[in-house]
Length: 636
Image 1 (tube, rainbow, N blue to C red):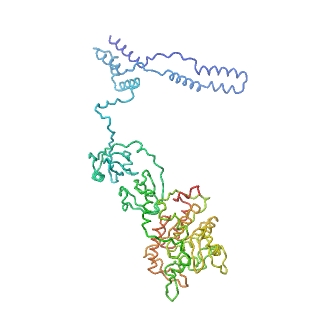
Image 2: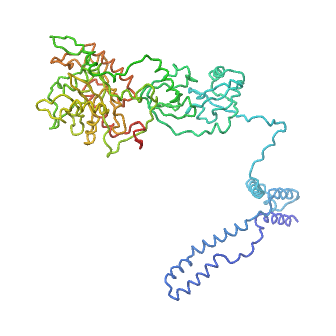
Image 3: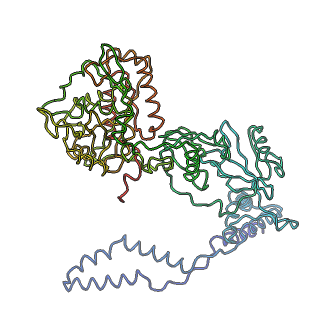
């Protein structure tokens, strides 16, 4: 009896897995059809039909026959998917185990079956079978409590681990309701990296302390006193405010200085970012119309800081500009008035007259006036008269009308959009502009650079109304022009800078710069900082290098043998007052025009500074640099 019971139970269990009714015989499928096609092809072979033999061999290939059989099987199960014989195999197994335990003396087969059915692996298999058979794939959630209020908002619990970094979020209070909200999340901060706090989230509790009725300053004190883990309870904002489309990253160059500690309007001074003219900024968030988030490049910090938007900073500049006393533009001053109002001379040494306000250093090895030819190539732009007009008219210089354009006013954009640019080999060379205070050695550095390789570097040939002397020719020392033509070029803004010396006009024209660049050489010019804007365009893509003087002590050591070029035959040595004026002038240039400087080189030793200048120019022509985005625009 025990044996028959064991057999019947075993057969009942096996029916669960193998007692599937046999499928009906399949109708003629793809295999039969291809077999008939193969037969037709075989008959075609005997009729010598072209290509039939190849087709017959393909259709008769064993791998194709096997593949077709697999395909037919898959199609059969797709039409008639297999269904479970019993959806409760696990329950049946427990029933069998109960029946076996009820037998007083089970047979060895029954004991073996009991051991198999009781094993955890088989029980897990049967349980999985029942879940698949009953399509029970999702967990059963407990029912919601009946007393749950229907109007209660969903609340999120946010846990952040506080470290040495700031939290990276600011809060504000709704003046009408008194509720505390997350005002902004600083890009790259702790809150932003967690992804759990968003602008507009309603703050309910901080570390178990309700914030209802508290001022933002009191909430900040709770955060400051919290150590380690900070637990927030917030009510999330609406999805529309948390999923705002962020604009693409924007790179700008700061054209103004900003200090958040001096700005009473900034929401959170500690979250503000200090920047100066010329700093490169990466704008990472512009969702707030007044306060953007940015990082200073290069920077090791991933956390951004608050900066005023373009419109806000421009309004601040406008307020500052209108509060300053009126200053007339120097460009409306006539040459005759300018020449008469500041012609103060000082008697020095043995009675020679020299201008002690404006000077230029002359090194002993560079004092030769006629040393302007190298390898048969005349190096222009170094004649004494051309160098002196700029120095002698330091205070009475007429600036080009470019310097009074809106682009240079205090009301221009405080940020200039920039893009990364690398010159292609077939592009024209970038214009190299050297600027620096009088006496720092800008002229000597430019001369040494051009003499180093006159076939690569060249200066622009200046224009003058002075009559040509014996041995001089136009286009060599100068471009000799009439005063009428010179005035015409001035009216059409064709000069970077110009001025008067001893009754004659001198100037560097934009066309002369273009001629050098079009010849395939690198044009290297030295000019006053205010003249940079006249060539700061997409045509020249200038690279501006500021030559900065070293400390006063270092100046006394390195300029011991240098002398000041003057308008008379005597060139006097430097004085301490000259060094002080040089440093003051350098500070003024950096403060007013530093945003246009691409590189600063300190001229301690002339030879070292010359090598730095050479390497910098090579990098300017070959390496990647940030330039104004307008220079790469296709629009004119």
